[in-house]
Image 1 (cartoon, rainbow over the protein chains, first blue to last red):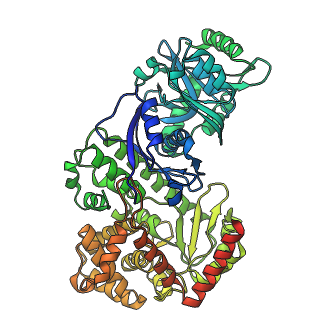
Image 2 (spheres, chains in turn green, orange):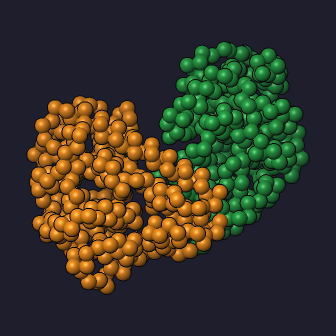
Image 3 (tube, rainbow over the protein chains, first blue to last red):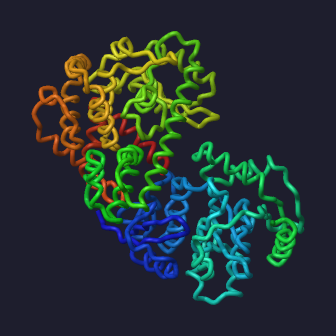
Length: 290
Length: 342
Protein backbone atom coordinates (compact mmCIF):
# COMPACT_ATOMS: atom_id res chain seq x y z
CA UNK A 1 0.00 0.00 0.00
CA UNK A 2 1.18 3.48 -0.73
CA UNK A 3 2.30 5.38 2.33
CA UNK A 4 0.35 8.54 3.10
CA UNK A 5 1.76 11.94 3.96
CA UNK A 6 0.25 13.72 6.89
CA UNK A 7 -0.20 17.09 8.48
CA UNK A 8 -1.84 17.97 11.78
CA UNK A 9 -4.33 20.79 12.31
CA UNK A 10 -5.75 22.23 15.52
CA UNK A 11 -9.05 24.03 15.03
CA UNK A 12 -10.72 25.25 18.19
CA UNK A 13 -10.85 22.31 20.61
CA UNK A 14 -10.49 19.66 17.88
CA UNK A 15 -7.33 18.22 16.43
CA UNK A 16 -7.08 16.49 13.08
CA UNK A 17 -4.52 14.30 11.42
CA UNK A 18 -4.98 14.80 7.69
CA UNK A 19 -3.42 11.94 5.74
CA UNK A 20 -3.15 12.29 1.96
CA UNK A 21 -1.90 10.31 -0.96
CA UNK A 22 -0.71 13.45 -2.82
CA UNK A 23 1.73 16.19 -2.01
CA UNK A 24 0.01 19.14 -3.63
CA UNK A 25 -3.09 19.59 -1.42
CA UNK A 26 -0.87 18.94 1.59
CA UNK A 27 1.36 21.91 0.74
CA UNK A 28 -1.69 24.06 0.19
CA UNK A 29 -3.19 23.06 3.54
CA UNK A 30 0.08 23.79 5.31
CA UNK A 31 0.32 27.20 3.71
CA UNK A 32 -3.26 28.26 4.47
CA UNK A 33 -3.19 26.92 8.03
CA UNK A 34 0.32 28.26 8.74
CA UNK A 35 -0.96 30.83 11.29
CA UNK A 36 -2.86 28.24 13.32
CA UNK A 37 -1.24 26.73 16.41
CA UNK A 38 0.98 23.86 15.36
CA UNK A 39 0.19 20.65 17.25
CA UNK A 40 3.55 18.93 16.97
CA UNK A 41 3.04 16.23 19.59
CA UNK A 42 1.28 13.76 17.28
CA UNK A 43 -2.01 13.56 19.19
CA UNK A 44 -5.24 13.90 17.22
CA UNK A 45 -8.92 13.46 17.90
CA UNK A 46 -9.62 12.35 14.34
CA UNK A 47 -7.86 11.08 11.27
CA UNK A 48 -9.08 12.27 7.85
CA UNK A 49 -7.95 10.21 4.87
CA UNK A 50 -7.80 11.59 1.34
CA UNK A 51 -6.91 8.84 -1.06
CA UNK A 52 -7.51 7.85 -4.69
CA UNK A 53 -10.91 6.16 -4.97
CA UNK A 54 -9.34 3.57 -7.30
CA UNK A 55 -5.59 2.82 -7.40
CA UNK A 56 -5.11 4.32 -10.89
CA UNK A 57 -6.93 7.47 -9.80
CA UNK A 58 -3.73 8.45 -8.07
CA UNK A 59 -2.33 9.40 -11.48
CA UNK A 60 -5.02 9.36 -14.16
CA UNK A 61 -7.64 12.07 -13.73
CA UNK A 62 -6.79 11.88 -10.03
CA UNK A 63 -9.82 11.92 -7.77
CA UNK A 64 -10.03 12.12 -4.01
CA UNK A 65 -12.04 9.76 -1.88
CA UNK A 66 -12.89 11.25 1.52
CA UNK A 67 -12.83 8.94 4.53
CA UNK A 68 -11.22 8.62 7.92
CA UNK A 69 -12.11 7.45 11.41
CA UNK A 70 -15.72 8.26 10.59
CA UNK A 71 -17.00 7.87 7.07
CA UNK A 72 -20.11 7.65 4.92
CA UNK A 73 -20.63 4.74 2.55
CA UNK A 74 -21.78 6.83 -0.41
CA UNK A 75 -19.38 9.80 -0.36
CA UNK A 76 -18.75 10.97 -3.93
CA UNK A 77 -15.07 11.53 -4.88
CA UNK A 78 -13.79 14.99 -5.83
CA UNK A 79 -11.20 15.90 -8.48
CA UNK A 80 -7.73 16.46 -7.04
CA UNK A 81 -7.83 20.22 -7.79
CA UNK A 82 -10.60 20.39 -5.18
CA UNK A 83 -8.40 18.70 -2.57
CA UNK A 84 -8.80 21.66 -0.20
CA UNK A 85 -12.57 21.20 -0.25
CA UNK A 86 -12.09 17.47 0.28
CA UNK A 87 -10.04 18.18 3.41
CA UNK A 88 -12.72 20.57 4.65
CA UNK A 89 -15.47 18.01 4.02
CA UNK A 90 -13.40 15.31 5.69
CA UNK A 91 -12.98 17.40 8.83
CA UNK A 92 -16.68 18.32 8.86
CA UNK A 93 -17.54 14.64 8.57
CA UNK A 94 -15.41 13.70 11.58
CA UNK A 95 -16.98 16.47 13.65
CA UNK A 96 -20.54 15.73 12.55
CA UNK A 97 -20.33 12.00 13.22
CA UNK A 98 -17.74 11.76 15.97
CA UNK A 99 -17.58 14.87 18.17
CA UNK A 100 -19.40 14.45 21.50
CA UNK A 101 -17.89 17.08 23.79
CA UNK A 102 -20.28 19.74 22.58
CA UNK A 103 -23.68 19.92 20.97
CA UNK A 104 -22.91 20.78 17.34
CA UNK A 105 -25.11 23.35 15.64
CA UNK A 106 -24.75 23.79 11.91
CA UNK A 107 -24.32 27.53 12.22
CA UNK A 108 -21.88 30.40 11.86
CA UNK A 109 -20.80 32.40 14.89
CA UNK A 110 -19.21 35.80 15.58
CA UNK A 111 -18.36 37.35 18.94
CA UNK A 112 -18.26 40.82 20.49
CA UNK A 113 -17.54 41.68 24.16
CA UNK A 114 -17.63 38.01 25.17
CA UNK A 115 -21.10 37.53 23.67
CA UNK A 116 -21.85 35.34 20.67
CA UNK A 117 -24.15 35.91 17.71
CA UNK A 118 -25.18 32.61 16.17
CA UNK A 119 -26.61 32.40 12.65
CA UNK A 120 -28.16 29.23 11.35
CA UNK A 121 -30.15 28.30 8.26
CA UNK A 122 -30.12 26.18 5.13
CA UNK A 123 -27.22 26.47 2.73
CA UNK A 124 -27.74 29.57 0.63
CA UNK A 125 -29.10 31.50 3.60
CA UNK A 126 -25.88 33.51 3.66
CA UNK A 127 -24.82 32.60 7.19
CA UNK A 128 -21.28 31.82 6.10
CA UNK A 129 -20.92 35.05 4.10
CA UNK A 130 -22.38 37.14 6.92
CA UNK A 131 -19.96 35.69 9.47
CA UNK A 132 -17.00 36.34 7.13
CA UNK A 133 -18.17 39.90 6.56
CA UNK A 134 -18.79 40.67 10.24
CA UNK A 135 -15.43 39.05 11.02
CA UNK A 136 -13.82 41.99 9.15
CA UNK A 137 -16.00 44.66 10.82
CA UNK A 138 -15.20 44.56 14.52
CA UNK A 139 -16.52 41.12 15.38
CA UNK A 140 -14.40 38.05 16.14
CA UNK A 141 -15.08 35.28 13.63
CA UNK A 142 -15.74 31.98 15.50
CA UNK A 143 -16.69 29.70 12.65
CA UNK A 144 -18.86 29.39 9.56
CA UNK A 145 -19.78 25.70 9.89
CA UNK A 146 -20.32 24.57 13.48
CA UNK A 147 -21.15 26.39 16.70
CA UNK A 148 -20.04 24.17 19.60
CA UNK A 149 -22.43 24.45 22.52
CA UNK A 150 -20.95 23.19 25.80
CA UNK A 151 -23.56 21.10 27.66
CA UNK A 152 -22.02 21.91 31.06
CA UNK A 153 -21.55 25.69 30.84
CA UNK A 154 -23.90 26.74 28.04
CA UNK A 155 -20.97 28.62 26.41
CA UNK A 156 -20.25 28.56 22.69
CA UNK A 157 -16.81 27.37 21.56
CA UNK A 158 -15.22 28.37 18.28
CA UNK A 159 -14.40 26.15 15.31
CA UNK A 160 -12.76 28.73 13.06
CA UNK A 161 -11.41 26.70 10.17
CA UNK A 162 -10.90 28.45 6.82
CA UNK A 163 -14.06 30.24 5.70
CA UNK A 164 -15.60 28.52 2.74
CA UNK A 165 -16.79 31.38 0.52
CA UNK A 166 -19.23 30.42 -2.19
CA UNK A 167 -20.23 31.92 -5.54
CA UNK A 168 -21.07 35.66 -5.34
CA UNK A 169 -19.61 35.95 -1.81
CA UNK A 170 -16.17 35.37 -3.32
CA UNK A 171 -16.11 38.60 -5.35
CA UNK A 172 -17.62 40.57 -2.47
CA UNK A 173 -14.86 39.57 -0.07
CA UNK A 174 -12.10 39.88 -2.70
CA UNK A 175 -12.96 43.56 -3.00
CA UNK A 176 -12.27 44.11 0.69
CA UNK A 177 -9.31 41.87 1.47
CA UNK A 178 -5.74 41.34 0.23
CA UNK A 179 -5.04 38.37 -2.01
CA UNK A 180 -2.81 36.57 0.51
CA UNK A 181 -5.83 35.88 2.67
CA UNK A 182 -7.31 33.59 0.02
CA UNK A 183 -6.79 30.05 -1.22
CA UNK A 184 -7.11 29.14 -4.91
CA UNK A 185 -10.46 29.50 -6.66
CA UNK A 186 -12.13 26.09 -6.93
CA UNK A 187 -14.50 26.22 -9.88
CA UNK A 188 -17.64 24.13 -10.31
CA UNK A 189 -17.40 22.04 -7.17
CA UNK A 190 -20.52 20.13 -6.04
CA UNK A 191 -21.23 23.21 -3.89
CA UNK A 192 -20.62 25.74 -6.69
CA UNK A 193 -17.52 27.94 -6.94
CA UNK A 194 -15.54 28.02 -3.72
CA UNK A 195 -12.66 30.09 -2.47
CA UNK A 196 -11.25 29.63 1.01
CA UNK A 197 -10.49 32.65 3.19
CA UNK A 198 -8.09 32.75 6.13
CA UNK A 199 -9.91 34.18 9.16
CA UNK A 200 -8.52 37.39 10.66
CA UNK A 201 -5.43 36.91 12.87
CA UNK A 202 -7.45 37.73 16.00
CA UNK A 203 -9.93 34.93 15.26
CA UNK A 204 -7.12 32.40 15.12
CA UNK A 205 -5.23 33.76 18.12
CA UNK A 206 -8.34 33.69 20.34
CA UNK A 207 -9.85 30.49 19.05
CA UNK A 208 -9.86 28.85 22.48
CA UNK A 209 -11.93 31.68 24.03
CA UNK A 210 -15.59 30.69 24.47
CA UNK A 211 -18.44 33.22 24.38
CA UNK A 212 -21.86 33.41 25.96
CA UNK A 213 -24.66 32.99 23.38
CA UNK A 214 -26.54 36.31 23.25
CA UNK A 215 -28.52 36.27 20.00
CA UNK A 216 -29.69 33.61 17.54
CA UNK A 217 -30.65 34.56 13.99
CA UNK A 218 -32.19 32.59 11.14
CA UNK A 219 -31.09 34.66 8.13
CA UNK A 220 -32.62 34.23 4.67
CA UNK A 221 -31.05 35.87 1.63
CA UNK A 222 -33.00 37.27 -1.33
CA UNK A 223 -36.22 38.48 0.31
CA UNK A 224 -37.57 41.94 1.19
CA UNK A 225 -35.95 43.04 4.46
CA UNK A 226 -38.01 41.74 7.38
CA UNK A 227 -37.69 40.64 10.99
CA UNK A 228 -39.94 37.91 12.44
CA UNK A 229 -40.38 36.57 15.93
CA UNK A 230 -40.46 32.82 16.32
CA UNK A 231 -42.09 30.51 18.83
CA UNK A 232 -39.79 28.55 21.12
CA UNK A 233 -41.02 25.20 19.84
CA UNK A 234 -40.25 26.17 16.24
CA UNK A 235 -36.78 27.34 17.27
CA UNK A 236 -36.19 24.11 19.16
CA UNK A 237 -37.24 21.87 16.28
CA UNK A 238 -35.21 23.85 13.73
CA UNK A 239 -32.14 23.60 15.97
CA UNK A 240 -32.55 19.83 16.38
CA UNK A 241 -32.53 19.66 12.58
CA UNK A 242 -29.48 21.93 12.46
CA UNK A 243 -27.59 19.76 14.94
CA UNK A 244 -25.54 16.86 13.67
CA UNK A 245 -25.18 15.14 17.05
CA UNK A 246 -28.34 16.04 18.95
CA UNK A 247 -29.57 12.43 18.88
CA UNK A 248 -26.13 10.98 19.61
CA UNK A 249 -25.78 13.05 22.79
CA UNK A 250 -29.02 11.68 24.24
CA UNK A 251 -30.26 13.42 27.37
CA UNK A 252 -27.27 15.77 27.60
CA UNK A 253 -28.13 17.14 24.16
CA UNK A 254 -31.75 17.67 25.08
CA UNK A 255 -30.85 19.56 28.26
CA UNK A 256 -28.28 21.74 26.52
CA UNK A 257 -30.66 22.64 23.72
CA UNK A 258 -33.73 23.39 25.86
CA UNK A 259 -31.61 25.65 28.08
CA UNK A 260 -30.21 27.39 25.01
CA UNK A 261 -33.67 28.00 23.52
CA UNK A 262 -34.91 29.23 26.87
CA UNK A 263 -32.19 31.81 27.33
CA UNK A 264 -31.17 33.08 23.91
CA UNK A 265 -33.41 35.57 22.08
CA UNK A 266 -34.03 34.59 18.45
CA UNK A 267 -35.33 36.21 15.26
CA UNK A 268 -35.73 35.23 11.63
CA UNK A 269 -34.41 37.91 9.29
CA UNK A 270 -34.71 38.44 5.54
CA UNK A 271 -32.28 40.60 3.57
CA UNK A 272 -31.15 41.35 0.03
CA UNK A 273 -27.65 42.75 0.53
CA UNK A 274 -24.79 42.57 2.98
CA UNK A 275 -25.26 46.21 4.01
CA UNK A 276 -28.94 45.58 4.72
CA UNK A 277 -28.13 42.52 6.82
CA UNK A 278 -25.47 44.39 8.76
CA UNK A 279 -27.91 47.17 9.58
CA UNK A 280 -30.58 44.70 10.80
CA UNK A 281 -28.05 42.66 12.80
CA UNK A 282 -26.63 45.74 14.56
CA UNK A 283 -30.14 46.92 15.41
CA UNK A 284 -31.20 43.56 16.83
CA UNK A 285 -27.89 43.19 18.68
CA UNK A 286 -28.38 46.54 20.47
CA UNK A 287 -31.99 45.73 21.23
CA UNK A 288 -31.85 42.08 22.28
CA UNK A 289 -28.35 40.89 23.12
CA UNK A 290 -27.74 41.21 26.84
CA UNK B 1 2.94 0.81 11.27
CA UNK B 2 1.95 -2.12 9.18
CA UNK B 3 -0.51 -4.17 11.21
CA UNK B 4 -3.02 -4.12 14.04
CA UNK B 5 -0.81 -5.66 16.72
CA UNK B 6 -0.73 -2.47 18.82
CA UNK B 7 -4.53 -2.65 19.09
CA UNK B 8 -4.52 -6.34 19.96
CA UNK B 9 -1.76 -5.76 22.49
CA UNK B 10 -3.60 -2.85 24.13
CA UNK B 11 -6.76 -4.93 24.54
CA UNK B 12 -4.84 -7.89 25.84
CA UNK B 13 -2.50 -5.98 28.10
CA UNK B 14 -3.64 -2.41 28.88
CA UNK B 15 -0.26 -1.59 30.44
CA UNK B 16 1.28 -1.90 26.95
CA UNK B 17 0.01 1.60 26.09
CA UNK B 18 2.35 3.23 28.60
CA UNK B 19 5.16 3.57 26.11
CA UNK B 20 3.06 5.18 23.36
CA UNK B 21 3.87 8.67 22.07
CA UNK B 22 1.32 10.99 20.43
CA UNK B 23 1.60 9.37 17.01
CA UNK B 24 1.31 5.93 18.59
CA UNK B 25 -1.93 6.93 20.31
CA UNK B 26 -3.37 8.43 17.15
CA UNK B 27 -2.59 5.22 15.28
CA UNK B 28 -4.15 3.13 18.04
CA UNK B 29 -7.35 5.20 18.08
CA UNK B 30 -7.73 5.04 14.29
CA UNK B 31 -7.26 1.27 14.27
CA UNK B 32 -9.70 0.79 17.13
CA UNK B 33 -12.33 2.93 15.43
CA UNK B 34 -11.87 1.10 12.13
CA UNK B 35 -12.25 -2.28 13.84
CA UNK B 36 -15.28 -1.13 15.91
CA UNK B 37 -13.27 -1.80 19.05
CA UNK B 38 -12.88 1.75 20.36
CA UNK B 39 -15.56 1.26 23.05
CA UNK B 40 -14.04 -1.98 24.29
CA UNK B 41 -10.58 -0.39 24.26
CA UNK B 42 -11.79 2.66 26.17
CA UNK B 43 -13.22 0.44 28.90
CA UNK B 44 -10.06 -1.64 29.04
CA UNK B 45 -8.02 1.55 29.57
CA UNK B 46 -10.28 3.03 32.24
CA UNK B 47 -7.77 2.42 35.01
CA UNK B 48 -4.71 3.30 32.93
CA UNK B 49 -2.97 6.62 33.28
CA UNK B 50 -3.37 7.97 29.74
CA UNK B 51 -2.24 11.35 28.34
CA UNK B 52 -4.63 14.29 28.84
CA UNK B 53 -5.17 14.63 25.08
CA UNK B 54 -6.33 11.02 24.87
CA UNK B 55 -8.68 10.82 27.85
CA UNK B 56 -11.55 12.78 26.23
CA UNK B 57 -11.37 10.59 23.11
CA UNK B 58 -11.78 7.50 25.29
CA UNK B 59 -14.50 9.11 27.41
CA UNK B 60 -16.43 9.97 24.24
CA UNK B 61 -16.22 6.34 23.15
CA UNK B 62 -17.53 5.17 26.51
CA UNK B 63 -20.44 7.62 26.35
CA UNK B 64 -21.23 6.69 22.74
CA UNK B 65 -21.36 3.00 23.62
CA UNK B 66 -23.42 3.63 26.72
CA UNK B 67 -26.02 5.15 24.41
CA UNK B 68 -25.65 2.29 21.93
CA UNK B 69 -26.35 -0.13 24.74
CA UNK B 70 -29.46 1.76 25.80
CA UNK B 71 -30.69 1.91 22.20
CA UNK B 72 -30.06 -1.82 21.67
CA UNK B 73 -32.09 -2.72 24.75
CA UNK B 74 -34.83 -0.33 23.70
CA UNK B 75 -34.94 -1.92 20.25
CA UNK B 76 -35.16 -5.38 21.83
CA UNK B 77 -38.06 -4.15 23.92
CA UNK B 78 -39.84 -2.69 20.87
CA UNK B 79 -39.52 -6.12 19.27
CA UNK B 80 -40.83 -7.77 22.43
CA UNK B 81 -43.95 -5.63 22.24
CA UNK B 82 -44.40 -6.20 18.51
CA UNK B 83 -44.16 -9.97 19.04
CA UNK B 84 -46.16 -10.12 22.27
CA UNK B 85 -48.78 -12.31 20.58
CA UNK B 86 -46.18 -14.81 19.33
CA UNK B 87 -46.03 -17.95 21.46
CA UNK B 88 -42.63 -19.26 20.32
CA UNK B 89 -39.21 -18.30 21.64
CA UNK B 90 -37.59 -15.06 20.51
CA UNK B 91 -33.83 -15.40 21.01
CA UNK B 92 -31.72 -12.22 21.13
CA UNK B 93 -28.36 -12.70 19.43
CA UNK B 94 -24.87 -11.16 19.36
CA UNK B 95 -24.32 -7.72 20.93
CA UNK B 96 -27.90 -7.24 22.09
CA UNK B 97 -27.77 -10.59 23.91
CA UNK B 98 -24.46 -9.68 25.56
CA UNK B 99 -25.84 -6.44 26.98
CA UNK B 100 -29.21 -7.99 27.87
CA UNK B 101 -27.40 -10.51 30.12
CA UNK B 102 -24.79 -7.95 31.16
CA UNK B 103 -21.86 -10.05 29.95
CA UNK B 104 -18.31 -8.70 29.78
CA UNK B 105 -18.47 -9.15 26.01
CA UNK B 106 -21.12 -6.41 25.97
CA UNK B 107 -18.93 -3.80 27.70
CA UNK B 108 -18.22 -1.05 25.20
CA UNK B 109 -19.30 -3.24 22.31
CA UNK B 110 -20.63 -1.52 19.22
CA UNK B 111 -24.13 -2.72 18.36
CA UNK B 112 -25.71 -1.90 15.03
CA UNK B 113 -28.63 -4.03 13.96
CA UNK B 114 -30.80 -6.12 16.20
CA UNK B 115 -30.42 -9.86 15.53
CA UNK B 116 -33.05 -12.30 16.71
CA UNK B 117 -33.71 -15.98 16.06
CA UNK B 118 -37.06 -17.77 15.87
CA UNK B 119 -38.14 -21.24 14.75
CA UNK B 120 -38.01 -21.63 10.97
CA UNK B 121 -41.61 -22.79 10.70
CA UNK B 122 -42.74 -19.56 12.40
CA UNK B 123 -40.89 -17.16 10.08
CA UNK B 124 -44.01 -16.17 8.14
CA UNK B 125 -45.93 -15.33 11.30
CA UNK B 126 -43.06 -13.32 12.82
CA UNK B 127 -42.45 -11.51 9.53
CA UNK B 128 -46.11 -10.44 9.37
CA UNK B 129 -46.18 -9.27 12.96
CA UNK B 130 -43.09 -7.13 12.39
CA UNK B 131 -44.49 -5.68 9.16
CA UNK B 132 -47.69 -4.82 11.03
CA UNK B 133 -45.67 -3.07 13.73
CA UNK B 134 -43.90 -0.70 11.33
CA UNK B 135 -40.88 -2.58 9.95
CA UNK B 136 -40.32 -2.43 6.18
CA UNK B 137 -38.13 -4.27 3.65
CA UNK B 138 -34.73 -2.73 2.96
CA UNK B 139 -33.97 -4.52 -0.29
CA UNK B 140 -36.88 -4.51 -2.68
CA UNK B 141 -34.84 -6.48 -5.24
CA UNK B 142 -36.66 -9.71 -6.24
CA UNK B 143 -33.48 -11.72 -6.85
CA UNK B 144 -32.01 -10.75 -3.49
CA UNK B 145 -35.30 -11.39 -1.78
CA UNK B 146 -35.67 -14.87 -3.27
CA UNK B 147 -32.03 -15.60 -2.59
CA UNK B 148 -32.42 -14.75 1.09
CA UNK B 149 -35.56 -16.84 1.44
CA UNK B 150 -34.22 -19.93 -0.28
CA UNK B 151 -30.61 -20.02 0.78
CA UNK B 152 -29.90 -17.80 3.76
CA UNK B 153 -30.14 -18.25 7.50
CA UNK B 154 -32.17 -15.09 7.92
CA UNK B 155 -34.94 -13.06 6.34
CA UNK B 156 -33.93 -10.14 4.14
CA UNK B 157 -33.20 -7.23 6.51
CA UNK B 158 -36.11 -5.13 7.77
CA UNK B 159 -35.89 -1.51 8.87
CA UNK B 160 -38.27 0.31 11.18
CA UNK B 161 -39.89 3.23 9.39
CA UNK B 162 -39.88 5.58 12.42
CA UNK B 163 -36.80 4.56 14.35
CA UNK B 164 -34.64 3.79 11.33
CA UNK B 165 -33.20 0.68 13.01
CA UNK B 166 -32.60 -2.63 11.27
CA UNK B 167 -33.59 -6.08 12.40
CA UNK B 168 -32.25 -9.38 11.10
CA UNK B 169 -34.61 -12.27 11.77
CA UNK B 170 -32.62 -15.53 11.80
CA UNK B 171 -33.88 -19.08 11.85
CA UNK B 172 -30.42 -20.59 12.17
CA UNK B 173 -26.83 -19.39 12.52
CA UNK B 174 -25.24 -20.12 9.14
CA UNK B 175 -26.47 -19.89 5.54
CA UNK B 176 -28.40 -23.03 4.54
CA UNK B 177 -25.91 -23.57 1.75
CA UNK B 178 -22.89 -23.59 4.06
CA UNK B 179 -21.27 -26.93 4.79
CA UNK B 180 -21.65 -27.07 8.54
CA UNK B 181 -25.33 -27.00 9.45
CA UNK B 182 -25.66 -26.10 13.13
CA UNK B 183 -28.72 -27.59 14.81
CA UNK B 184 -31.04 -24.61 15.15
CA UNK B 185 -33.74 -26.65 16.92
CA UNK B 186 -31.29 -27.67 19.64
CA UNK B 187 -30.17 -24.03 20.05
CA UNK B 188 -33.76 -22.90 20.54
CA UNK B 189 -34.46 -25.76 22.95
CA UNK B 190 -31.45 -24.89 25.11
CA UNK B 191 -32.06 -21.12 25.07
CA UNK B 192 -32.25 -19.36 28.43
CA UNK B 193 -35.20 -17.14 29.31
CA UNK B 194 -34.68 -13.55 30.50
CA UNK B 195 -36.92 -11.62 32.88
CA UNK B 196 -38.42 -9.82 29.90
CA UNK B 197 -39.69 -13.10 28.47
CA UNK B 198 -37.22 -13.02 25.61
CA UNK B 199 -34.39 -15.56 25.37
CA UNK B 200 -30.65 -15.69 24.82
CA UNK B 201 -28.62 -18.70 23.72
CA UNK B 202 -27.14 -21.02 26.35
CA UNK B 203 -23.43 -20.21 26.99
CA UNK B 204 -21.97 -22.97 24.80
CA UNK B 205 -24.26 -22.07 21.89
CA UNK B 206 -23.51 -18.38 22.33
CA UNK B 207 -19.78 -19.08 21.95
CA UNK B 208 -20.41 -21.36 18.98
CA UNK B 209 -22.55 -18.79 17.24
CA UNK B 210 -19.73 -16.27 17.60
CA UNK B 211 -17.33 -18.92 16.29
CA UNK B 212 -19.52 -19.77 13.30
CA UNK B 213 -19.87 -16.07 12.54
CA UNK B 214 -16.09 -15.55 12.63
CA UNK B 215 -14.67 -18.71 11.06
CA UNK B 216 -17.39 -20.31 8.93
CA UNK B 217 -19.12 -17.24 7.51
CA UNK B 218 -17.96 -14.03 5.89
CA UNK B 219 -14.48 -12.90 4.96
CA UNK B 220 -13.10 -12.07 8.43
CA UNK B 221 -13.71 -8.36 7.92
CA UNK B 222 -14.18 -6.93 11.40
CA UNK B 223 -12.78 -10.21 12.67
CA UNK B 224 -10.79 -8.68 15.53
CA UNK B 225 -14.05 -7.56 17.11
CA UNK B 226 -15.66 -10.98 16.67
CA UNK B 227 -12.58 -12.64 18.10
CA UNK B 228 -12.69 -10.23 21.04
CA UNK B 229 -16.31 -11.33 21.65
CA UNK B 230 -15.10 -14.93 21.75
CA UNK B 231 -12.27 -14.07 24.12
CA UNK B 232 -14.57 -12.25 26.52
CA UNK B 233 -17.30 -14.91 26.41
CA UNK B 234 -14.86 -17.73 27.08
CA UNK B 235 -13.08 -15.95 29.92
CA UNK B 236 -16.41 -15.31 31.62
CA UNK B 237 -18.03 -18.71 30.99
CA UNK B 238 -14.98 -20.85 31.72
CA UNK B 239 -14.21 -19.07 34.98
CA UNK B 240 -15.51 -21.20 37.83
CA UNK B 241 -17.33 -23.66 35.57
CA UNK B 242 -15.17 -26.70 34.92
CA UNK B 243 -17.96 -28.30 32.91
CA UNK B 244 -17.87 -25.47 30.37
CA UNK B 245 -15.10 -26.96 28.22
CA UNK B 246 -16.83 -30.34 28.15
CA UNK B 247 -20.17 -28.84 27.21
CA UNK B 248 -18.78 -26.53 24.54
CA UNK B 249 -16.82 -29.39 22.98
CA UNK B 250 -19.84 -31.70 22.91
CA UNK B 251 -22.02 -28.96 21.58
CA UNK B 252 -19.50 -28.10 18.86
CA UNK B 253 -19.54 -31.69 17.66
CA UNK B 254 -23.33 -31.76 17.63
CA UNK B 255 -23.42 -28.61 15.48
CA UNK B 256 -20.64 -29.77 13.17
CA UNK B 257 -18.47 -26.87 14.36
CA UNK B 258 -15.66 -28.70 16.19
CA UNK B 259 -12.86 -27.72 13.76
CA UNK B 260 -14.18 -24.15 13.66
CA UNK B 261 -14.18 -23.92 17.45
CA UNK B 262 -10.65 -25.29 17.57
CA UNK B 263 -9.45 -22.72 15.04
CA UNK B 264 -11.15 -19.83 16.85
CA UNK B 265 -9.65 -20.91 20.17
CA UNK B 266 -6.17 -21.07 18.70
CA UNK B 267 -6.56 -17.62 17.16
CA UNK B 268 -7.98 -16.17 20.39
CA UNK B 269 -5.18 -17.67 22.46
CA UNK B 270 -2.56 -16.45 20.01
CA UNK B 271 -3.87 -12.89 19.67
CA UNK B 272 -5.66 -12.13 22.92
CA UNK B 273 -3.97 -14.64 25.21
CA UNK B 274 -7.32 -16.30 25.92
CA UNK B 275 -6.93 -19.17 28.39
CA UNK B 276 -8.22 -22.13 26.36
CA UNK B 277 -8.43 -25.87 26.82
CA UNK B 278 -5.48 -27.31 24.90
CA UNK B 279 -7.35 -30.50 24.08
CA UNK B 280 -10.28 -28.59 22.55
CA UNK B 281 -8.06 -26.11 20.68
CA UNK B 282 -5.94 -28.88 19.19
CA UNK B 283 -2.55 -28.38 17.55
CA UNK B 284 -1.75 -25.33 15.48
CA UNK B 285 -2.08 -25.55 11.71
CA UNK B 286 -0.12 -23.78 9.05
CA UNK B 287 -3.35 -22.13 7.84
CA UNK B 288 -3.75 -20.41 11.23
CA UNK B 289 -1.01 -18.11 10.04
CA UNK B 290 -2.97 -16.71 7.10
CA UNK B 291 -6.03 -16.21 9.29
CA UNK B 292 -3.90 -14.22 11.68
CA UNK B 293 -2.47 -12.24 8.79
CA UNK B 294 -5.98 -11.42 7.63
CA UNK B 295 -7.20 -10.42 11.09
CA UNK B 296 -4.31 -8.01 11.55
CA UNK B 297 -4.60 -6.39 8.09
CA UNK B 298 -5.03 -2.79 9.28
CA UNK B 299 -2.51 0.05 9.36
CA UNK B 300 -2.05 3.03 11.66
CA UNK B 301 -4.07 5.31 9.39
CA UNK B 302 -7.00 2.93 9.83
CA UNK B 303 -6.69 1.55 6.29
CA UNK B 304 -7.21 -2.06 5.35
CA UNK B 305 -3.96 -3.53 4.08
CA UNK B 306 -2.91 -6.85 2.48
CA UNK B 307 -5.24 -6.74 -0.47
CA UNK B 308 -4.37 -10.20 -1.72
CA UNK B 309 -4.96 -11.85 1.67
CA UNK B 310 -8.28 -10.07 1.94
CA UNK B 311 -9.23 -11.16 -1.58
CA UNK B 312 -8.45 -14.77 -0.74
CA UNK B 313 -10.73 -14.62 2.27
CA UNK B 314 -13.42 -12.86 0.26
CA UNK B 315 -13.43 -15.62 -2.33
CA UNK B 316 -13.28 -18.23 0.43
CA UNK B 317 -16.33 -16.68 2.13
CA UNK B 318 -18.39 -17.26 -0.99
CA UNK B 319 -16.91 -20.71 -1.44
CA UNK B 320 -17.90 -21.63 2.12
CA UNK B 321 -21.41 -20.41 1.63
CA UNK B 322 -22.27 -21.94 -1.72
CA UNK B 323 -21.66 -25.04 -3.79
CA UNK B 324 -19.63 -24.19 -6.94
CA UNK B 325 -22.45 -24.19 -9.50
CA UNK B 326 -24.61 -22.03 -7.34
CA UNK B 327 -21.73 -19.66 -6.75
CA UNK B 328 -21.21 -19.33 -10.50
CA UNK B 329 -24.88 -18.58 -11.04
CA UNK B 330 -24.95 -16.08 -8.19
CA UNK B 331 -21.87 -14.22 -9.38
CA UNK B 332 -23.24 -14.15 -12.93
CA UNK B 333 -26.53 -12.59 -11.81
CA UNK B 334 -24.69 -10.05 -9.66
CA UNK B 335 -22.27 -9.24 -12.49
CA UNK B 336 -25.10 -8.70 -14.96
CA UNK B 337 -26.78 -6.35 -12.50
CA UNK B 338 -23.51 -4.46 -12.05
CA UNK B 339 -23.31 -4.05 -15.83
CA UNK B 340 -26.87 -2.78 -15.89
CA UNK B 341 -26.09 -0.18 -13.26
CA UNK B 342 -22.89 1.06 -14.91
